[in-house]
Image (cartoon, rainbow, N blue to C red):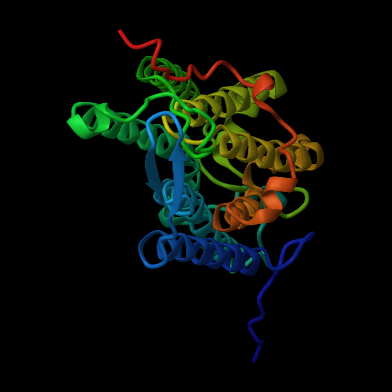
Length: 322
């Protein structure tokens, strides 16, 4: 009797196992962030020499909820990738043609999982925008309380964790992010319908080629591919900048990590359209930073990108209130 063996395609093996490992790693980061937020909240007191008052903040946990949601969006994408690989790597390829191996959807579930991979990757800018909107709403509620009105609204550098973006600037940046994200999402949907690329493909280096990349490239080549990528990055970038209370230093570190990982992934794999699917190392880097961002070591490592290279994040001040 012929024995059934698991057939791997040419190139890097164990893609399903790698995606599975990183998916669980993302879940671990989320668990650590939630534990730090709810079970081990550390507080630090800053003195205000102007009015002899003190301000106590949960420095290590204030934004952990936002970071946990950010990691959850990436974890959803990793789990979707794992489910796709688990099916594609277990398909019987003994009689499959080269074209069938490349476009490896055989059943409706394969198409559904391919769509899930694309849609989960689109969650990242939306999570950042949603977190920004919630923080702005909380800011408005706090500004109406008498106790909050008695506190200074400007950052006097006694508290490095308190630097607020004005509500008007936050709304403007968030609107820009939402508009650009909507346009690139609509563009991808139109390209998918036009090109008929509804299935994840196996790339030249055995990374996934998502339907967003293959459909956009099939429709307009690399110019449209990079235009769509730029719009996605733009929306995530401005969604991050729109957060009204996220400390500038943490914004700079997040941007730095994204740029370093993006250069590595796209420098190696953009020409085979596989770069979009390589989130694992970026997710690992984000998780390490989010869970250890208050460690002393980060204070000695200035981020590669500074505020001078970022668009204006208008800071609130006592003199600008009307």
